[in-house]
Amino acid sequence: MLDALASALQLDAGTLKLFHVESATQTELFRLLPSVDELLRSQAISPLISAHGHAAVVEACRAALDELRRSIVEGPAEATANRERVESAIAMLPAAVSAQLAHSSRLSLRRVVNATGVVLHTNLGRAPLAESALQHALEVARGYSNLEFDLAAGERGERDAHVDRLFRLLFSDIEAQVSGQPSPQRTQSQFRTIVVNNNAAAVLLALNTLAEGGEVIVSRGELVEIGGSFRIPEVMAKSGAILREVGTTNRTRLADYEQAISERTKLLLRVHRSNFKIIGFTEQPPLEALVELGRRRQIPVVEDLGSGALVSAETMGGVAEPTVSARLRAGVDVVTFSGDKLLGGPQAGILAGRAELIARIRSNPLFRALRVDKLIYSVLESTLLAYVRQQFEAVPALRMLQLTAGELLARAQALAAQLAASCRGRAQVEVVACESVVGGGAAPGWELPSHGLAVVISGMGADELLIRLRGHEPPVIARVEHGRVMLDMRTVLPGEESEIVAALKSALGEI
Image (cartoon, rainbow, N blue to C red; front, side):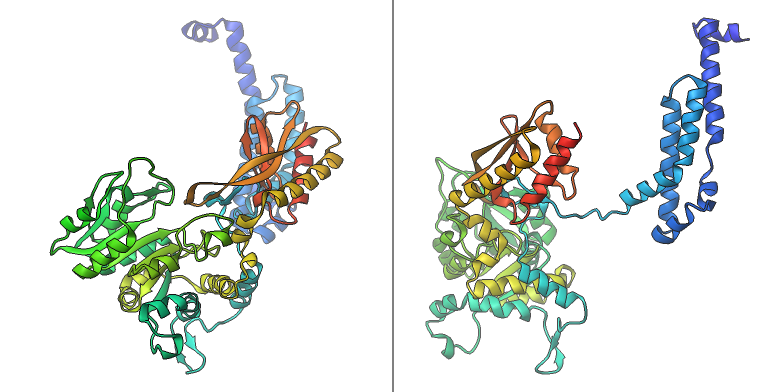
């Protein structure tokens, strides 16, 4: 029978016999393995169930047994050696299950060291938060708070009040210009703000409230896509508004807007090109002209400003981005912007503008679905308070943008000295000039002079070194330039240098 099977498979009988013996040996080894239930009943596993829960331990037992089965299939052909290896592995199963649990139960969202030089790195959580904001969030989160309770009146309040009061302070100089009256003579604020979960939500809410069922006029050069999931045409479609494109990709005139206005027009929308620039043969009407057109035709003007800069370029290390105040001063009716970009706060979408329009937007049932919780308000309030007090250095993103090339050179040289002492010549480390970027879809094309370290390890490629740095705790995220790993000092927070040293030493220890 064996000869007949060998003939059918075009194998010689000896080869098939060897295959049959090896398969039989694997079957015997598989029979040595305990079942999941047997593992769970063992004394070594019981404490793990108490610590990690039954479901997690079951999954870890299955994973450990699957790994052992793979090792049997891939193990040596010599039966005795293979059996000894498997028996030894079975004895170590409780330790393997424990290691599997330690790995799987580790928190997935973790702090990393950002050495990429991208200040608002979307994949790394964008703006790091101020220490004061973290402390305020902790204080609010550990107990109850007056999120929607007016302490003075002893009745229900509005959650927007906690940040709206600070925005009004920041916009007070604009209100004086708009109303023509000094602050004490104004009885009601010209501007109000509300907060939702991100800027896409802010745009969606504004469009749905002010233009549902009607047309919204937008320049073709402003139909942007950000991050693959935020496209102006798609957000507009979801809002129930109808897109009315005008002009061309590179040139749109005021007359294009005016000619497109009809009885169906509900809104004029301007979109800041957050992540790209159009240069060369271009034209765009001045914002003031668009606002004047809206006033004349009684059509609100909304601008998606995106990056949310609240201060001038000088305060942001020369990064020239339009500010919210400038847009409101120019007469834009509603401005939407992000909280976690150049504002330097938590992820949020903020709508600021004429009080009556913001009130309409707030009354939209969608607002309740898109609003934020007490933690976002606490962090945003503390961040805005730093702006009111003009303590800009307390906002980490602004502090990073303000760092000079000289300051970064000194930090890079100090870190290079630490690495030289720790790595004892096993890594080639060079202090080099480099360029940082703002990131987060803000200030496209704007580069900030910086300094960092170019690292090369003999016998290890740059990509392999990146992997090992990412595998450290905490992970160190860097970039590759000209075949070398680049550690840009602009985005390395104070005190993280020692973690970079430890990560590089760990990477060296594996070779």
